[in-house]
Structures are given as C-alpha cells and as structure tokens.
Image 1: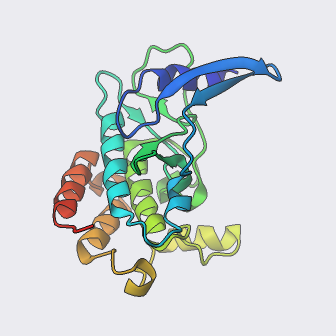
Image 2 (image 1 turned 90 degrees about the vertical axis):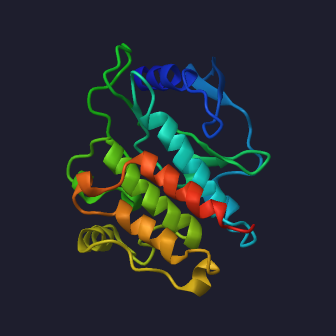
Image 3 (image 1 turned 90 degrees about the horizontal axis):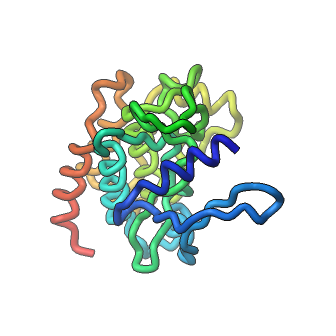
Length: 227
C-alpha cells in the first residue's frame, strides 16, 4: 500500500509530453489501489518496433526528453529506475511516453511515502555497479537508456543470447554488448547512434554522459534523419 501511494503521489506531479499522464486512482478492486491512465492501444515500445517499418530513433529522442524532464525537476529530480522498452508506452500519434514509476526515487523529497532504498530494475538493463546492491541513480538511468536503445534497434532484449541467469550475469560483467549487424537493425544504428550507446555503458558511472547531453545528441542526429 505504501509503495502504491508513493507512486501515485509522484506520478500525479509529472506533466510532460513524453510521460504518461495520471488520470487518477480507484480503490474498488479487491481492496487495492489501482492507478488509472489513458489506454494506449499501440502498446509499448518493444512491441511497437516489432513492426520493422517503425523507426526506433524518434522514440529514443522522446525517451531522452522524458528522462531529461525527470532528472531536471526542480527542486526534486526523479530517477526512473526501471527504464526499458516495455515501460515506454506509445501514444496514439506514435510518441514515446515513459511509465511505471513504481521504482522511481524522488531526490530530497519531503513526501511521507518515500522509501529510503527502493530496489528493483530488470537485470538485462541494469548497470554493473547495481548487480549486488541495487540503487537508483541518474547514471543507472543512462546505462538503461543505452540498453533500451539497443533493444529498440534490434527488437530483442539486451544480452538476449544469455540463456540462463548465471550466463547473463557473466555476460554483463564481461563488458558492453557487441555491435549488432546493419541487417539486424535495418541500417538505422549508425556509427553516431552506436557511439552514443557505448558512451552510456562506461563502467565508471561518472564517466557516462548526462541526460542533457543525450537530448542534445539525439536532437542533432534526428535533425539529419529523413523518415
């Protein structure tokens, strides 16, 4: 209950074109709190890009802008904590909308529903420093942005070749993913986009770019894309 109330409190304060708006909540189903948002009939980003006619690059531009809004909120930045394709919904006009803030962390918040050390995330998208002790951070969101980009370009989960938990952990610790082929990404993952992904996967968290830089770079790269 406390976690859901915290999520409702957080989500109710968010207003951005790349964040799913909260419509309200109800308590009429099995004595639980149910969060209500608009139904997105186009589904989530991972499902959406399974149609190979869909170019993931505009979605990534929207994701970057949504993250920038969260990270830049004043006076209380918000870190998402579980960024991945399934947690990005697609609006009726095809724009990316961040959702699922149940693991988010409000920095320096006075909200009475705040949890001191939220835990979670999804392993294929988690930064190596969080494997033993998961802590939500802006650097963790940046790592996950790079993994989400790879996911949407390839239409597969990051490290999809790892067939067991042990194999996945070993692969994550080994280093960043290998670059996929042009054929598998329909030549959309250009050198510039790949370099941006790699920059998000620096092993030292503080060497990863800030979200404002990702917004700047995605805007620059999209300015030259003919859709």
